[in-house]
Length: 327
Image: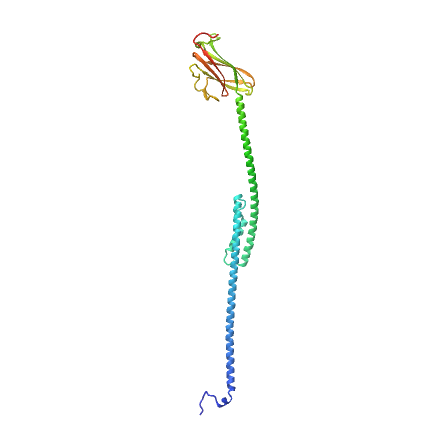
């Protein structure tokens, strides 16, 4: 009876390479195949991982690049808005000709803002934003040209206004000079038109019952004083002229109704006794007679003053006595 054993037989000991070589070769092949498969699997995994990492990196780079480009476009837009605000404000200060209300500029701004503020804008949208910003800058360039034109016009207007102001000052100065000369001439003519009086006489009369008059120096017999004088002037125009007579009685009081006052050129306001209006003819000498009546004449000196055009032109004194006749 034979027992099973793992020990090699004599035949195998004599020929060791035959069965062992076959077994080892198969084993080695299997191991090699398995190793190759394992290495292939690892190589695939490594490749796939590297490819995935590369795709992720490429996506991140592309996203970062897109964000950078979008930020760059937004910065360009911000600078464009600053340029627009500057030129728009300047024009608003001038004449309100160009302003934010311009529909085309407003529409461009809305479109650009929508893109640059959009999260993850596409390349096509960014390209459109660039094109819109270029168009907006073209509009701003037109505004700048308009601003330059308005500035030039304003400078010309300012220059014209300065010239007109200077001319106005010259005219005002000339007008003031002319007015002053005119007023001076008018004042000169006014003074020169004052009458000159001559041949002044003051005659007291006594009126009889039969209508006849006799001169007298007795105060109680005097019924009226007649003041007569001549006036003339070559400057005064023809027409009505007022003469004012002031009679001062011996007691020093002016015979007046108390309400009649004349503002004189040199003597202030004075009460007057009688006002007479004559119709003067230029360049002629006219004789004037003015009768002065009152119920009772005092004994003493009566002072008679005649004013015309605010100036005293004649003065005389007449004495009345207690008794006796004149003439």
